[in-house]
Length: 310
Image 1 (cartoon, rainbow, N blue to C red):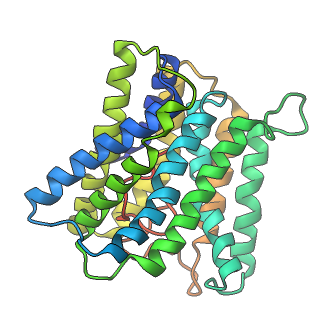
Image 2 (image 1 turned 180 degrees about the vertical axis):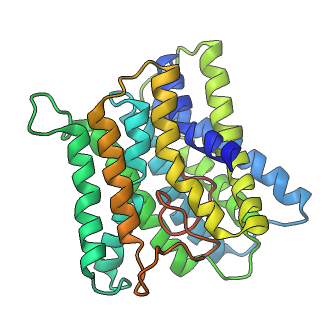
């Protein structure tokens, strides 16, 4: 569990290093999708799973790949140009809050009770606390913060779509995920042309390779195995560790400021997310749905497209 949380939560660190070392958001997105797809394809074929062949499934995969991979991966890279990696990790944890709003809009969520409504308000209150819009130059309405929140909202749209159109249709999960990242690679192929050529260093190359191979491809496989071997509750627990890992790595490796406001905001966001997961029976909703829910990951832990780690 600790290894999975470390690899998964480190994604924001590798994005930041890649940016600092000259890679553009477009290049980061494309290479990440490409390498993640390569890892999952190898694992799928090694497990005897084959890619879907019907055109309808690939069409649905393209929609899911756009909202779950190509778009949010690009937005997280854009956002981290101006926002610390640790804060990006905390904002990624707001995905369940967006999922709740999307579900309410689509009519798939039951009416909010006091605890879940309080969690929704509290979670977004944590975001306000982090950016402190009452302070001059808070950055809440800056392009970076909006891009990060947009990425988290995109995950929520993707999870709602996948739950309706992709999961439970007979395709093996690993093959489905590999196919989705393959589609995301095709969708993100034009992205490197935006922003000009990358003046990349060897450090940047290493960072983006680790991001694609370990923080995207391998983390999905480890999460898949954890759910199979230890159950969805263990996998869900990892979701609460990801913002903590991203904040800690940002402070330790990149010397990002670890302020009381950031730590408090993170705690408030996670508390809000936990409250939105309260079920009618009064317990936290950490049951399975398309493979098991993970806080900070929206609907599915084992979801097509690999880990949503930013």
